[in-house]
Image (cartoon, rainbow, N blue to C red; front, top):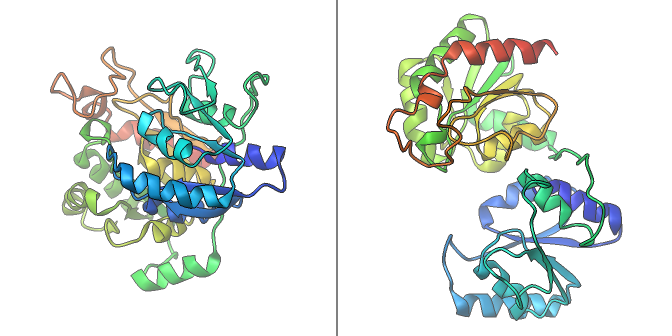
Length: 320
């Protein structure tokens, strides 16, 4: 969701060098963004303060002579390192009262900027710049050589249409479409002549194994690919079915048609950023709740979202 912001910076400053400080696992994503010059690994886990490590890294960044830093997270911790590094212009939202740490500080109007991508994108412009109504969609580039290598490594074939299913959602179970629904959908698709590939990290092994047990003909790739390989293989999909997750945004940025299943979260805040998507949600009175686990214990927003809803959306998006 930050890639359109990088594109806007390149539009404003064509000769700029844009480096990204981010968790190491994001390297395969940034390697596929043409605007990024270098990815620098952030050695901090979620919620970790590690002041000594931040100070040490700040000294290294100071030596690089950056003109500006844009801080996307809203935490105080994320604003410490740029301040330690003495970067001249430190841009970001107020967040956790970060006055002093940021000196180009913005106050968010969530009505004017309801989507996360809009909030990121606006930080690439001057504080008082007119709001841009049309934001370009993210774009990830693909290497055909690395894609062919991934196919060979895993012994995969492209002789049948590939339907990707991404059943994970690291945020929590209230975002995950039930395995029994995904398995029923997969069985229908396979009966119709397609092949179904399941994607996910090692953290998604449990739900993918459950789907594979119910629909043995699926090809379960969960935990068997790197993120780089998953991106390359997803680019081959005829269409994808995704929860509101990181892989949903990857599929969108690859320009592949997709059906996005929303339960506890809202497509108004983090929609797939593409014109080739159908959103499936029941819009129940209790959703979106934005909780990791259903507070009512029934998870009707996803349990009652049966495979026929998704199949209908799949047929619609593949006709367009």
